[in-house]
Length: 512
Image (cartoon, rainbow, N blue to C red; front, side):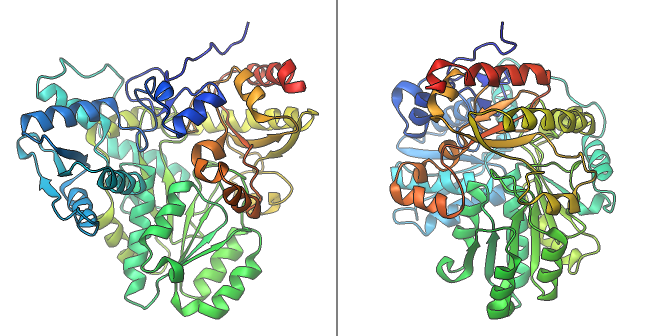
């Protein structure tokens, strides 16, 4: 009997109200989810909260729209008055968006904007909130529903009883020993942390005539979108260098345009190819030209790699690994206290960042104490899964921090040789769909939780590229196979994870 019970389409992962993942058990479900097939979407009550509006948020939005007579208008609830104003300002630049109105809902301490019902405006608003992570928290929406008498009580969960911010920063300082509390800025989501860091550097560097941003290596989809969307003139100010190991290409770019470059953004390692640049050399190059370096170690975790000593700013999704129960959206911006402009960057980050809602903080503080232990468990499990996959004839290639192409670079930033985290990707010598459909592991978006999670990552993150020949060519140019699978190791016995993979790879539909 499998240790992994089947999870039907639409089941929350984990099975709780504020879960950040959702079960997509077959490739047909995955594609239907991406194509908004009604037969699939009707089963998706919740999902990753920046992509699927949380049911508490939908319920609260509907209640307030009825209460305030907003028929014929769309209502968006935002994390703060500032984020609501930013959304309204953005929509004012869109045709038919000048009628957007800011609604403070002061009696409930909530903030939002409305606009006339329009599919174009809806898409613009949702995309901006997705890229900046400025949605209202699902727990704040739940609390508001209770205050309004719509819900009888909040869902039962364990919360930290003391000073949640102090507890969170205490654990973070264990992983970031060069920092003090003033250097650590928890954000309402990982994307909001990235947005705040990007805007902080952009605003600081624009005053110096620097507007160009460099994307080093393939990044998470919304980070790419953010860099393209918020540079002043993307055709001029956004540069993509696909090979993270080719610092010579970056040197040439700096030689040509160094006085105009505001910053370089890189993941350490990257998602989903798990590749690592030479971070010390990268940092030296960037600093020599007075640009800024933002690094994101979310794939590996703060307890596996040290990148802040090399960066000006570090961004991190605390949803991953730190909140290992898989039921919180949160992020972090950390300022390198020894870096140039540290004081100015602190001020700019504080002005742009959306803080974490109080109950999310209490929930994160209740979970984060297990962060270091959880990573130690993953450090032991991941090499065993990698070794098994690499020995299997149906597996084409395995990507992980110690893969040969950037192993030496990873070890330059690893806290220890065995600090490899819980993420890997792999490709098969056989078609993707039969394996994916057959494997009994939980399947859905996100990573870094105590539930193992498998996803056909390129389908779920870049489906627009998968479905066209031009898109597949773009992926190929970056060394990405659209059939790649990404596996986040959980805290289940490693023998059970391997057994689930072995069972699926021995399935007749896979072998043939």
